[in-house]
Length: 101
Image 1 (tube, rainbow, N blue to C red):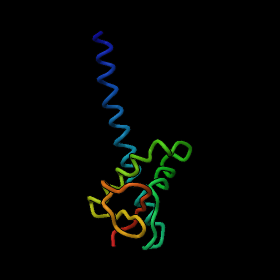
Image 2 (cartoon, rainbow, N blue to C red):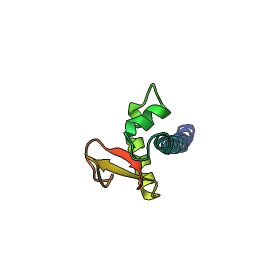
Image 3 (tube, one colour):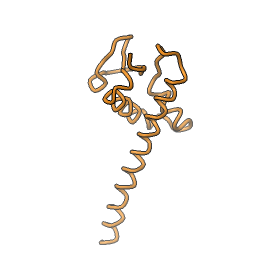
Image 4 (tube, one colour):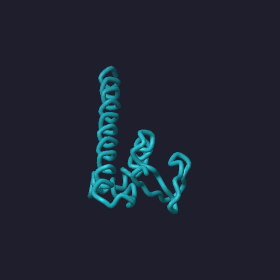
């Protein structure tokens, strides 16, 4: 049983490391996509997810929203719905991400 406990304990840090790596890649993708567009342009979180994992992007959608939330906290981006800035933590439905103005 001790072996099973050790393998389970080791799996969690690896999963966390993968999650952190995906989050960092999503943040970089968001900033990179916005940098390549006109200053007033927006992107969808799915654009960042597709940039990170073109063939398996759907599982990254929640992570993409969390990455956008972290970038809101650092002051890099705003999240909008229908052109109005919203709180990403309470926003329901589709959102857009833009550079902070």
